[in-house]
Length: 379
Ligand SMILES: Cc1ncc(COP(=O)(O)O)c(C=O)c1O
Image 1 (cartoon, rainbow, N blue to C red):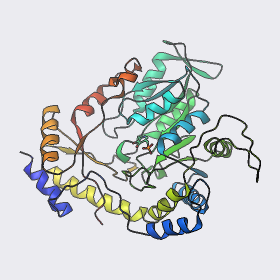
Image 2: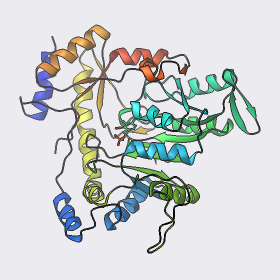
Image 3: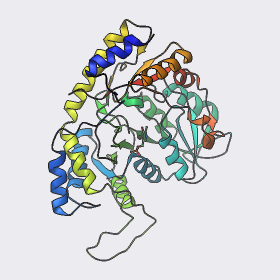
Image 4: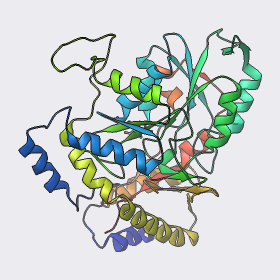
């Protein structure tokens, strides 16, 4: 039943061997920079490659500052600390996301509130956000108070699902009106732009991941982007154990974190950054091939909506129903073509089962129908 899709993917990747969902492409200066890094002996948390990638990331995204971190989750945790999210406060995010977004909220002792996504972007829906805030909150002393719990809603984290930008300009306007700090989870959307601006640069802070499965990788790594100098300085300080800079003395002025990206990871990332435009061109070509192919089938391929330029990190298709999705997952994986369902909604996980939720109609619909298909750039 799914033979046609399996054959198309095998023909596209020119192999009948196992086809992964997304593999890193290490085709540039990776070995050269890693050797340079090893020869310098600066393999750990200081070194020239860290400075280089931070400058490049700021340039590439258009943010004034980029702070490299050990991974995307630590970047998210730091972003929430910079927003002063405290124990027993609340943070709005989408029900349809990767668990790291919500884990980071829990690291602060805060509680997530799960809202719906838009069907086309699969990211936080501005209308769901507006409706929830209008019906459930009041403003007191420039703070947004949840009428049901009496708690402060301090921040909001929309996520750009699979690299598809969500309507983050509208989300920003709503957050501003309600005194809510906006952190974009752009872990999956390095190289994706909304209305010509890089994802992650609409919020006060944006967060990215360079895990091995992402569009570019540091092995493991992440970053925080911001155009606010005070936040950037605090981010550097917090991620470097809050050590007050001094040539020999140890003085830490608060509880800090060891969240800096090691120089050896930055060496790998620099080589990857040099190739990012090429990777994105190739991934967009692949998405176009998929789009054409799926036009003539009973699935729909998830295309970038107007105003979005997606990196097409993971290509997605929408099945008629859950049964077709489950059969597709089983048949493709048994035939060596790796596919995956979208995540379970966050409030269905044991640790978030008591969280407050809005109406999750679109998220529920997508949860049953979306699968990712192989998406590695073909070079
Ligand atoms: C949406 C989202 N947020 C956060 C993360 C966390 O990034 P990392 O794996 O680098 O910690 C990931 C990916 O892994 C992600 O997909």
